[in-house]
Image 1 (cartoon, rainbow, N blue to C red):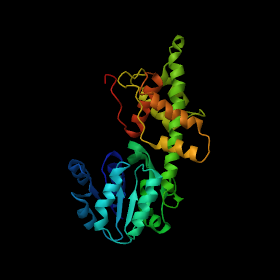
Image 2 (cartoon, helix red, strand yellow):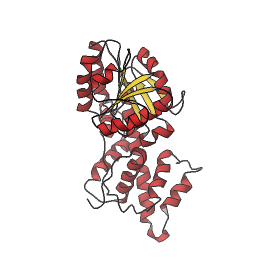
Image 3 (spheres, one colour):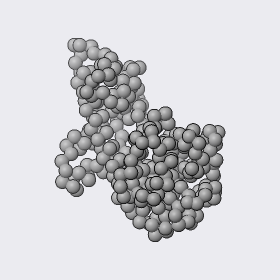
Image 4 (cartoon, rainbow, N blue to C red):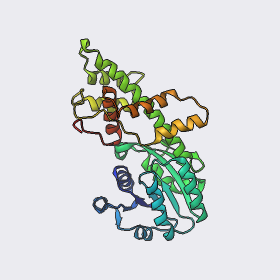
Length: 303
């Protein structure tokens, strides 16, 4: 399969490499020409403009967008539409709000295009481990994408699924990230309690390593917590500032709209907002975990 990958940030570039490693062909585009050149060094074709990228694909073309949610997605679609033909497939693999996805799918349908939303989890580890992908869209388009989805997933028959109609992939990913907020918050608060018990002088990295095996709270997030604590459990270089990329807010709003109580996720979101006005070990560890699984930037403690 030959795929046009638009956006060669950490995840887009690594997804492209995983496709290339399995024999797929990738044409990569990014505003950063150095990112394009780097992917060309891995065996991809590079394009310096979106029309050139489209010209290098065979119908039905697959245009996979890995660009920041929001205006960047709409701008990319605006630039692509004049160059596409009916039957081509637009894929949004970013963290778009599912309501934006529904709007964009209607617009694509007006031009005879298929729109597929792929909520993608895996962060900077996806190249080696594979990506969890929550897919929404028409059956025929998803079936056409199946070879790529099976390559990008941890296995052909695991780690990915067709959730349903267009929008469902991003909706499920939104809730996934809301759950992630709650799980991370519980770990961070628990380790903060351990950290505060000074009389025992606990080695928090040892605690994390102990819990990683056999414990009912073992998880990949705990594995990454252990990594974050390995160098210095005081996390001296990390400011207690925890960013949020939107999905937690959307999940809480959706829960309110659906009359579904979601106190854990809501409290985790509020805690992230609190991190911007107070100093705590909980927030330092939350920031460290986000850096571990997603490569998200952390604020330096001196900032």
